[in-house]
Image 1 (cartoon, helix red, strand yellow):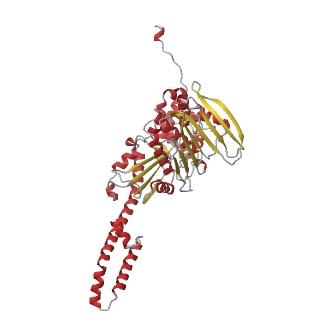
Image 2 (cartoon, one colour):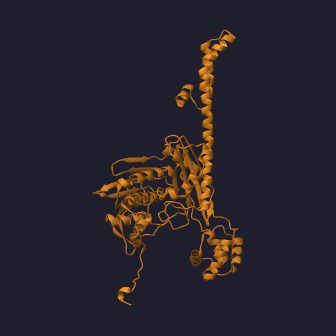
Image 3 (cartoon, rainbow, N blue to C red):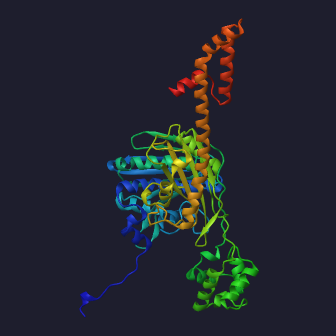
Amino acid sequence: MTEAAVERFRALTPSEFFYRNKELAGFSNPARALYQTVRELIENALDATDSHMIRPVIKVVVRREGEDRFFSVTVEDNGIGIPPAHVPQAFGQLLYSSKYVLRQTRGMFGLGAKMAVLYGQMTAGKPVEVVTSTILSKRIHHFKVSINIKSNTPSIVKKGSYSKLSEWHGTSVRIYLEGDWMRSKSKIYEYLKRTAIIAPYADIIFEDPEGNVLYFERSISKLPIPPREVKPHPKGVDLEMLKMMASATKAKTLKDFLVKEFQSVGEVTALRIISRAGLDPRKSPKSLRGHEVERLVRAIKEDDKIKPPKGDHLSFVGPEIIEAGLKAVLKPEFVAAVTRKPSVYGGHAFIVEAGIAYGGEIQPSDKPVLYRYANKIPLLYDEGSDVSRKVIDTIDWGVYGVSFPAPLAVLVHICSTKVPYKGVGKESVADVPEVQKEIELAVREVARRLRRYLMKKRREREEAERAVAIVKYIPELVRSLKKIVGDVKEDMLEKELLKMVNMKLRAMRINSVDEVVVALE
């Protein structure tokens, strides 16, 4: 065998892998990279605030830096801040995060912001700049950090700190990168609009490279209930996860291992699973062999008496906040929202929420405008392949009193620690039957409320039209009454009849006949 025929093997660090495959994380071109950087930094800022019951104030600035193709993106929040000891890894080491627990967060992989740093390093050649201060700290810390791609470790270019002269706490991140503002502009503005809908409890200030300032003012003070970290559900584990959990547990017996390390498992359930697997409940979980782990997993999968997972680790938005967001941004004449109870697919809990907005300033379209969200993150790409689009398009909207073109918008939010995305881009949700069913039930529920509103509105219009018709005949009616009764003051009678009609209209929240005439015209 010749030397040229010998294969050479080596390992890639996560940094090297994503350096070579940056499009997997959404950084496929300068336009997408600029959008993705804005999105990732805003999501981190919101997680650092609302997850800790802090009303977010998010400031975003995109500026041109020298040449037209280079930009800086700066995002500042008023969150909990980052302990200085963790800043280098938080921005300079891929797959390093505080989010690797069973609790819903916007990001799940500790990848997004670091990919923006890596892309900026590849294209602009500058480190990320971070300024941060925790809530109780008396100092503000600043860093310049880059990523050592070969070792996937942070390189600290510069660091320092100074005394805090105000009560500010939070984090400011600035990334320099190659971008394309003109091609990404519409997506960034749409993303900000959709973020303001799902997070109306936030103040969001955005300044673009052209000097335009966009301000989404907080329209509600209420915050979503933050998620709690929970234990995994037995139905959601596989062989490898069970092996890792068994090797790391402090439980002395298999029975205690199942009870202490999993949710929805009590002593009776644990003994039933162990018996089905043909194992000894007193056996040490650390001594489990491969075939015994397989039997245990099989016994768990076959047990249909295990209680479904709870939704405590999920953070839904809630109908009141969704309605406030739709009202503030879309300015419709009607809104309704619903939050479904937790449901389960593949051992993973999820919650579906839906909102509907109709009329007002919403522009008529040939089909409902769809606003998709997963874990409060707006999904802007791949709408055609998303399960929500499929559900919306299969609904017969005529049943609900809507005929197209119509000013109709529908919001769908899915929250879970395991959202069934279709691909690594995480922009569309797969057609999982359990998820699809919940989406349809949620959308139909808010659609029924819209139907009741439209039917009421239609009845009121018909009554108003009858009132106008009656008003037209009042003078003739007065003349006829005068002929029958004799001495009748025509002006007074006409005013009394018109007063009765107007009282009826005001009961329908219409001020006067004149208002009806204008509306009908």
